[in-house]
Length: 450
Ligand code: FUB
Image (cartoon, rainbow, N blue to C red; front, side):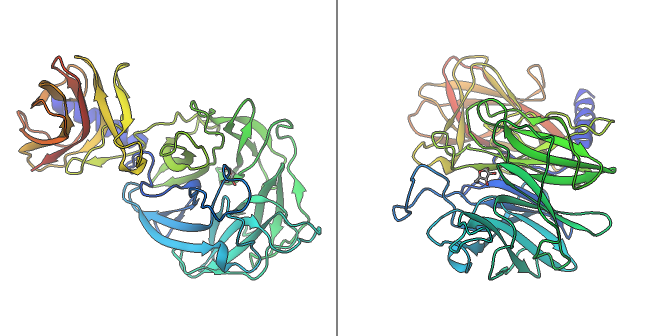
């Protein structure tokens, strides 16, 4: 009876929070930054920048952004992401300086069956104003996954980074970009040329870097979102207006500065299956070098008046995790103060993280695990403890029903233990894992087996 109530409660909260799913960061085998998410043909596509460690042959600063190409990723459930591979490279674009590794934040938009990928990079020829520096180009494809054919020249009239394109309800197309200020201009129907003089968007903060515009329209309100350095590092802010070209009025902060000093952040916002999501980045896999970043997703909510509620960054991300998958509880929803998270292998951060429960009573909670309606026999766990100890896995909270008692043997190496379930589970549940023994334990993942 009690379990039914918990399941009903969780089903209700999931309805509010949406049903898609992901742990943060969502791309786990390479760095990814500046995510522009788009919904095409019922799927979510993410067009991020692709940070890489600086190769020795790169001229100039070694401790700076280094990006030589772009990949596109897609997902139907926001958990399982397919990498469709490299779509545009600095070596294949005639106007790009192929030694510059400067393929910064992109965007992609679909129109009349074609997909237009907009990207900034350092030019190898002087732009319209006689200067080199950043231009913005377009690559065109028949499918969101590509192949994309780069246009031979950059867009004339733009000197800047971080392109963003908005197609208004009346079909007019606008392009936004940044270079100190945030600019807007109309795009011609061909999506490749400006159709008006660039305008500086005013009434935005005058002090502190602004970049990364991302615009969208909801219920007649145009939202101009952008990262801005109000204090030390970038936070995500927004302004609203009733016209794509402004005027816009500064309205609020979507996400505060990184608590660990990742200097950049960069956002996009989409609605997918009746839930709004914020895509952003953080240097999860590279805590000591904030130019190697990773894409994250969290749910975003509006107030009744159209203002945006501040998004608290989470590791848990959004949605459901299947009980039969390896559940990385280090991407937790909540934890006790003493519980620690650390890399499994600090020399290979892409191997992921582990949970460390140092003292009896320490715990970690992971929400929205989907057990479906099948019966389960075992809980599997990858665990390590130097001395014998015991873990308890409960449903829900600290006082929830115990579903497994795991006796962990002493050993210097990781071990996998199969523990019989002492109670059946179905539906969607929070898991609560706590240390019940007197010796610390480290956990890589847990998994349920029918
Ligand atoms: O990724 C390089 C630059 O960092 C982007 O273009 C900016 O928006 C910032 O995220």
